[in-house]
Length: 364
Image (cartoon, rainbow, N blue to C red; front, side):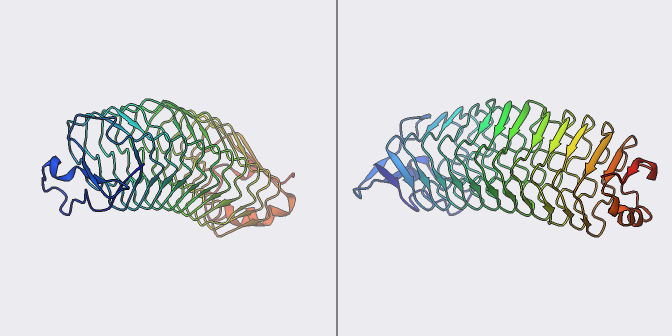
């Protein structure tokens, strides 16, 4: 097995052109060196590489439009800045493969394939952890990626770990799946699939328990094809955790948070589902507490929403429901009988509910 060591590819002045032959060296475990050719096809060049050390491929092939194929069949670990900017702007790359990659360290793949508009398929079947800024902007505007996006073994995303990773990748189709993901750090998935469009039809966050501050802010903000959204295990949402997360997802019909007890983060769901015009079902069966501005504008204006219930809600923070249902003109809201004074005091000062008081019932 080989290890690409630090600084062999280090490009101290981004934008300053260095001949690719000068950059293309890597050290192997025995301490020797080998030339990495400036070939158009890099499919077999990295076949024996198991680890990329700090700065190992930093800016290595930046802007090299001749590169067409990149494969790392045995790579398991990428360390600090190991592949940051490595293939940024390589617009003729079509295939990228990381079949055994387990760990992406801090900044390890930041902007690594940014603007590689020829890439059609991306997969990380064994990836378990992503460090801070690990995949930040990694596939930004790679708009020819046409496969579903699946991270079957990923359990944690650190802060900014997947911030803007697939931003404006308008070719992604089918599902976006994180079936064993447990936690998302601050800004971990912010803008991750922003403006990816209507070909995304489903998402899977079936094990997700905690979303950090801005964790999914603007994550799927666009006119996606997603119809149903459920967070069956979610119990914690940080400040602006779902801020604008599914804004304007016009095909969305149902949203469910079956275990969510407290929205403790300030503006936790602010604008989260705003403009979802086909939304008809919203479930918060266990919700007891809404923080300051916790649901502000969350469902404004979801014009197809006709009924919502809060069977266990007992505490609402300052403007917790501020304009939450603004524009939902046909909505009926159901609360516990002992919430009457709280709700009525709020409706005196803002258009919290988007429905007249006759649409508010205290019958639970």
